[in-house]
Image (cartoon, rainbow, N blue to C red):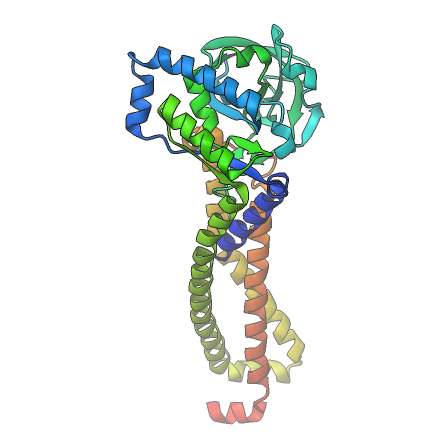
Length: 384
């Protein structure tokens, strides 16, 4: 539980740091609340053509009347089917709000959002580095437009980066097997309903007002038969903390109760063991045993006990990361690890280990101190 608490809080702190560009400004984020009936209405054979036409019209309206940042993501695979990949199409302002770090190469130039070339420039996650090296080209089927596109790698992202969600700041979209491509002028002329409805979720609109966002929501519902609400990023984060803090407090309370029970049993066991070994200790003292040696022996015992107790915790942490790295968790959640555990998971494991070690050591040392205050001769007489 200590591992889970520390890990969750570290992820939230990291998430808030990653979202600073959103928090600092008044930004509204789209929340796609399309119902099943609306979805089936738009995408059935009778209405799909009309839905695509309306999608193009609405996107043109947003493009000309709002400052926005959009992204839509679709899963696909490399041509040989060896690696699942996420293709993310991003607008020009995307990196204003998500300043991702580049390991090699560069990010997109402004001109690359305007010009559509045969070789589309892309950024790739480090998990694709062996298949798509810097400067090389490769082909990939893009489900968003149902075309096989030719990409040229201009940059490789740093390892284990993610797009943090304001709805779940202790989670996020891992980017190690992601391909970022720019949304070009040519792309904008051929927007379809699939792309638009995917872009609604987490669509960022800034330099605007609540009334303007309410107006856009009404237009979307009336013309595109979809329900999308635009909520301030600050309000979204506030709502996250309102749900997150009670959950954390409950875990802390449960952890404290379990810790108290553990300490009572732990101290009782040490005291009982020392009491049953009084005569043996007395003999060792008479042979030259020093009190500080008893403390050292106890610390080493506590260290071994803590290491042993953390074996299942470590197995859980590694297994959880392995599951996230496997295809069973979905390509959007995949992690490529340069070590058995990512940085936050490793830090959480080390901190929780140290906390348990310190608490156990202090309690055991205090127990021994209390035990040593009783005269040795009295202990021996009592045993007799």
